[in-house]
Structure formats: C-alpha cells, structure tokens
Image (cartoon, rainbow, N blue to C red; front, side, top):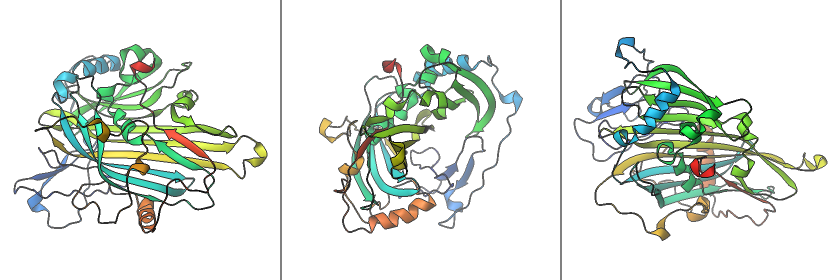
Length: 392
C-alpha cells in the first residue's frame, strides 16, 4: 500500500503482488505489511526497477511497550466490540475493489470470473446493509463435453461482503455465543509496527452447532479488530450442509468438506477500513449408489477473494437498486468475455501459478457458454452469509 493514502493491493499466497498508480507524488512511500512481521517501507524514489523482491523480518515484542490490561480473551473481544465507534469509519464511502471467483473440479480449473467492483460502505455503526455493483469484468470456462455436473456459485459477490465481521457480526465475536467457544490469548505479535493480540478460538466439545475455529488479531493499544483467519470446525461441518448446498439432485450425495475464510482491515486517516477478504469452500459430490461412485465422485473447490484498491468519501450516494448485486446473482452470468489487456491500470490480485496458465487457456476460447447443453446435473453452491445474530 501507499503509506497514508487509500491506494493498496494484496499479495497472492506465493507472496507476489503488483501495485499500479498513476498519481504518485515525489515523497510517496510504499509500505509492505504482514501479520507477525515488521512493517517494511521504501520511498518510491528509491525503487529503480519494475520487479522488486522484498524480505520481511519477524519482530519481537518488548514487554515494556505493552499496555497492561486483563489477559482475558473474552474481556479483550468484548472491549474490542465496544470500541468499534472509536476505531472504524463512521461516514459512508465508496470502495473500489478487485474481485475474483474461481472453481476447480478435482485438480482442474474449470471456471474463472474477475471484476472491478464498487462497494457502497455504510458507517460501521449503521444497520443499513452495504451495496456492491460491478464496474466491469471478464470470465472464462474450461469445461468439456465430458463433464456431467454443472457447479454453480450463487451470490459469491454479495455474500463475500458478509466477511466484514466487524460490521456484520459473527458468532465468535458475539457475547451471546461465547459459551460455544474456547478462547486463548496465544501471544502478542506485531502488525504494521503495532503490538497485536493473537487470540485463538475453537468450538467447545459437545456443541451441536456450526461453529468456527481460527485466529483473531486485535490491536493492543486501540483494541481494533484488524483481521481474522478462521474456518468451520470439523464438529461444526457436520451441521453446515444446509448453509452451503442450496439445491442438488436426489441421486447425489453432496457434502461440504471444508470452509475457510480470511478478512483483514487497513488503517487510513486514523480509521480502520475493510482491506481484503477470501473464502475457500470445498464440496464433495458422490452418487448415492456405491456401484456408481467410481463414475461420479468429484471434489469441487470454490475460491472467492477481493481486495480494496481505493476509497472515496466525497460526493457519494447509495447505488440504484437495479445496479446492485444481490444474493441470488451468479457472477459468471453477469459479465462478458474480454481480452487480456482489459484491466488497464486497475490494481488486481496476481493469480497463483497454476491459475495463470488456466487464465490464458480460458480466455483464448472463441465462444464460452456457462450453461453447457451437455450438463445433466446442477449443483447450486451458495457461500452463505456468516452465522450472525439473526440466525439463532
């Protein structure tokens, strides 16, 4: 990100990233941060190459720098939720973001959709829902006439916004659900040169409910929630089928295998704002008859991710209803195929190496239809809004 500005992006899982900006100032500084590592800053004027290798170093926490308060994770989380008005944006804004949705069948990439989106972000104290609309996008499909299942992701764009757990809530942050979890302050690390609590949580034994396990990061000084990495626990997965599978044929056994999430926030103008989020859902599809399982046994994986690349708080208004993406919308049906130079100067997430090759193959096709005539089965996979108070 550009220090003290709203321009930024996120690295892929290999650590590669690309940041484009056309209005750089002479004294602008590039900042690189990652949970548990020292903040790395370098003036743009010192960068004399288009490709830069950056090595981050781990940071040690000095005990005398830490604010003394009860070392109780539930106390820390409770105070963090009470501190939302002091830590997060209270004025509406429009976020520019890059969104990618990809689907794999076993080890093969079968579809890819990307879009530049606008998010109307309400105040973090407002109950009005955020809105999202597509500015432009592109897609590709790699299915063949050998496929017999059409795997459809519904509402991925809309529902990924629910990963803003500070605004939308989630059970492990809700005092009414604390009794379902075990919490522990694992350690104190640094994030962007600030001491940060790492709190681990997991579903209590014997709880018959779809709960999560993972890590929560809270700034020690301000008690701002700055990020979370979490997944449905194995116990919770047994109760989650209804959350993920909207519709499937009676002859098929469809079961969610894993569901993991990430969400992070970035500080801008002394307020924390949504930065990036990712969901990774795996679904196993088998024929109910054992003798047919060799012919029909697939693992589908759906990955949705977005990164906020810009923030605008001036002269904004909520989007018109017919412009917005809704829970039933299917991204791949909302956008068209385009050429490789489509993004221009927009900031995007660099694909992982295997997907890079898939992208070239997908976008070189002359004609791509999502609803293939040969598809004889459809499975609607909805990435659900994360469990909150309204789902008790």
